[in-house]
Image (cartoon, rainbow, N blue to C red; front, top):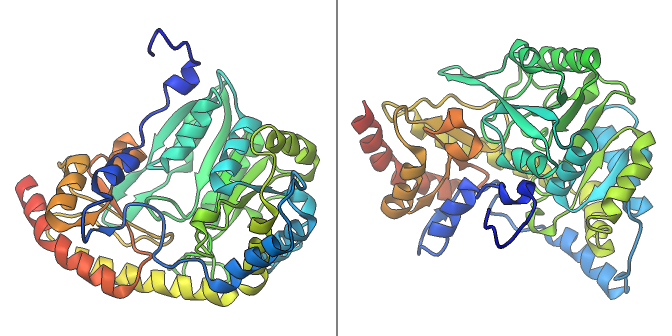
Length: 397
């Protein structure tokens, strides 16, 4: 900390994102194919954007409901009911400035200074960021990688629990690994949380993106919603970003027991003071009329996954099991520094990937590639990557 600026240690100790570092290095490189962030190449469909335009034309530019306009909260409840096959009360939902805002609120609700929160890693770095700013200490529980995929062990989670533990973060399907919890694994975590009185912070943002029929339930990933009661200590973080190509709109929601509604409204008031109405109108249209677009997105991701992994399978020395869910190829070059490799791939292949060290110490030899992109781009990506990755993997052997 610079002594001339006496800021709080929670702020001073926030880390530079290992992803942003690579993005800033390569973002202006001509011809680069950017696959480093969790974002596809499709812009928001016109029918969604036009709903926002109509709202603006109608003059909906004033302050609004802190928890979200009633129409959107009802639309979220109806959408969740369709996906999970059960009824939901709108009182469980509060609209947020994207999934990150939902995560920040969840972190504030469940933890604070001196508390511990368990996070299986590799994990999206923003979990640790949000928890750290709230004053909590992240306890990493490393998952292990083999040719069969990333292995999750609920017993390891249980062994990490201490008197200071307040919450467990479960991201399934996972960013970055694509690991997708089975029903048995979710039940084990839920029983542990119930037994110890712990919160579960559930990031199920990629729940519609599941490719393993042996795991899937009605075409989507298993969820805590399949096993939990409404009063279980679970905070669900969600976003409009992935399913409806709305990353730049910054709108999502947090789901929690209805009794927490006023507290969450207070946290919204003192952080964002609500989400613009015209953005909420677009979200309603997406939820109510966007199912065919979501299906198109999932089909593109499924095809992208096949293109990428067919190519990775032909590169000796990589550990690259197909992920059962999410939008990412997350593969290892054992013995290599992924950060250095990411910079080299920008310079020599013209492809931007995220270095695994950004997601946890146990992934420093991994790279993340987002395959939510058109087939032609991914085919060109793999043509560019194959010779460079082959050389790097061979040098490590």
